[in-house]
Every structure is written in structure tokens, then in C-alpha cells.
Image (tube, rainbow over all chains, first blue to last red; front, top):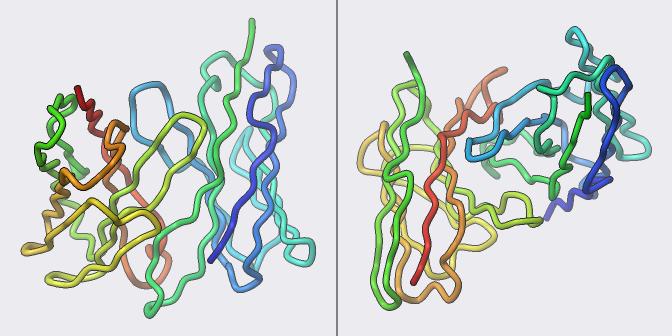
Length: 115
Length: 115
């Protein structure tokens, strides 16, 4: 099955700096790569996703890049703010009605943005 | 508002007891999922269902059971056979076609503690 590795496990940045979280995946058939943000005691919330037909996607301060050849994708947060502090999860999946639509998650990155 | 409701939010169980976690969605999603979250372990898939009256085992199904009698509901039973049931349980749902496939919406979670 799909194996998703995520690094780093913890990340501390100063407010206004950029944060980068990286993930690698093992199944070359994977074609959907979302990122989720989880605040303490809550369920994960989708913040951005990318499908394998594009290499980069941006939404305000958040961007995701995908390198299918190297099988890795990254989350970039610019101009970080204290409210960005949370645990971030990457995931990978192969969209196929036979194999299901479940996501395979990385182990998460705990991001701390200090004022 | 559309969303996913999990209950109870906190649950305590004695060893040897079965317990059922509720998950209800009003998003008209066909697919539903149960994940288990442990500190530093990310999210691991327990069971998923793509359609009513059908479900499949995920990576860690042993000691758990589910049912899908209604589109809106996907309860999870943690049985006494689950050796280490203390965890945070997350329910999610998604569409199964087009751009909605794989886009998981999560509930707020249920925290189970075995005494």
C-alpha cells in the first residue's frame, strides 16, 4: 500500500517567516495530494490540495508544489502568523472507484509560530 | 449548516466492554471513513464505506466493527478484542465522483479512554 513520509515532525518559526513541510510517497499511481490543518482537540480541516495534472497551486499565503518524478510534495506557508500554529498532515491517494477514496496520511508536523 | 457530527466527544470505558461511537453526516456524501489518531502516529484507517450496506477494512480493522444501514450514518463499535483502544477517533465523509472524490470532511472527533 501507499506509504507517506512527512518531515519535519516539529517546526518552530518566528512570525513573518516562511514554513516548509515536505512529504514523500511510495505509490506512483497516487494522483491526489491534500494538506490538512488540525487544531488542538478538533478534527483536521482541508487547507489546500493538488492533483497530479498540475505542479503548483497557491491560495493566498499557502502553496503546494508537486514533483511526480521524485514522488514528493511540499507545503509552503509565507508570512506566518501565530494562528498558523497547529499540526499539519499531508496525504496521498489514488482516485479509483475500485480501490476506494481513503487517504493515506503522513504522521504530521507540529508547527509553532512565535510572535 | 452541513457537516459531520460525532458523539460522544469524550467516552470512558472499562476493559472488556464494547462501545459504539456515532457518526452522522448531512453532506449527502456517499463515502464515509473511520480513522484512529494516536500521538505521533498520524491518522490510520480503520474502516471505510463507499455505499450503503457495503464497507471495507482499512489498515487497522482488528477489534473494530462498523455498519452502514443509512447513507447518513456510519457507527463504529470498539470491541473488547481491541487490545489498545484508548485513542482519538475521527469520522470523515467524501463524495465518490469528480472533484469531490477523496476530498474528506472530518468530524470533531471522539476521545475514548479505557480505564
